[in-house]
Length: 521
Image (cartoon, rainbow, N blue to C red):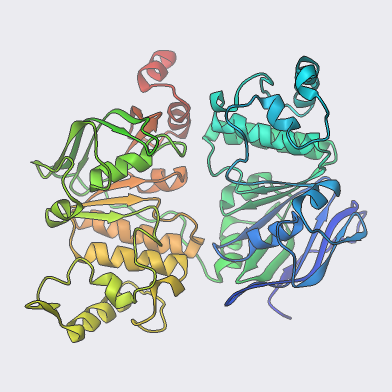
């Protein structure tokens, strides 16, 4: 036995529409896919699970014609195929819907769907195509206005356009890469209805995800990749528990809900008043944001990606200037002050981009963890860094935070996502921050690493730190936060203290709390 869990049904199986045999794919220094087998049946939703870097996306990029395998065979509907491009895959009926949509914002839904197709002079027959696409969308329960410009659509509606694009091209095998990552709860529900409708019409879907509860809800079968190898193949999703899936992914038991001690929050540490700021294009990103975070509490910020979360974190931490408003840290005005000014006053920051902002990838673990201390004794001895003290400090953090690393001289770029995040947390927490701004702290990590990061955040809460947790993982926000603000188009829609996911979802799609309350009354 090779440790792989398999499921084979000898009853009347539906036809196999995709079979990948012995797929090998190497990149410099990495074996991304190691003799991977994968089988997809007609009319099923097959979830592909695995931690960040497990090889899921590589395998599916091979199936979609974006990469060529170094070895192995691919059969589509019983026929051996060799794809040189996504066009070849689409001709074989395979379409991939990526996390980041590939649409032209200034064009209509119809124009985006027809782009690249052999439809001569379609611009002169747009009204005819509008009608065709409206009927086509209706067939799959995809509510969309064919005449709408892409920029006018919500993220969920844009995803529907991507699905329609592939279906209109004749795809009956759809690969969906983290399809719920940018959706509000109500949009996820609508997507699942659409997927079930598609499957009922004989389509087959590969659902790449790391959200175990969604996999259990939508999938018929599950396969798991770990370090490029298959650890579970075609396991029936019905009856499997989240704990079993997690164990297949990381090889050990995982706690999904950590104990959070009841404690009264202390004084206000962070106060944001009427904050306005622009994004990188010079357009309004924050429109009068006000919020507070107290000592000994975790305050969550929920919202669909791109609604001002990134800019808010950057303004608070000094990485972006605001155009109006005020930020107080422990009562002191830090508005538009340099990063170093806020750090000296107790600010810690876990940035969204852990590789390029959170660390210096080519520097060693030691160099990365002393970044905030290299001018302070005992690491600084006058104008010189005492490397013995620096090494001792790094060794202490590696042991305390259970960072898996060959040596403290290892460059940060060679660490896994989870261990790299632990390096950042170790550095920030070792400075005893009064305020910790954590932006997507568990994004892309496996369930085991997520548990460790969340435990560290709760420990800081118990130690009295004020934590602003900005995350697109609603389950994480509800589990860890004492209060949750919801942001939409740069405005705070309201605040939730009871973790009501329905109310949070409504605010994430633009309904203010006052309106929700009026609807309840």
